[in-house]
Length: 93
Image (cartoon, rainbow, N blue to C red):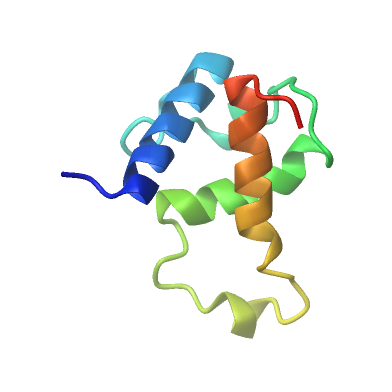
């Protein structure tokens, strides 16, 4: 049985596929160009949500983010993923 986080990641991937019509990368994730076409109400510009999505899908598993980007606030990643998930799901903020 999948853990809750895995199920939410799968659901996010489904929502992104529905919104963008793109499933070309990895095991069904959209490409960056299609991701940037998402038109839902978010607190930040859609481009601010791309790196968190890359992180969730596993692109940074072996990457030392803090070393390479010491000024980046990684605590924003989970918050932005939740915002994106809710917006794509159609939940109000």
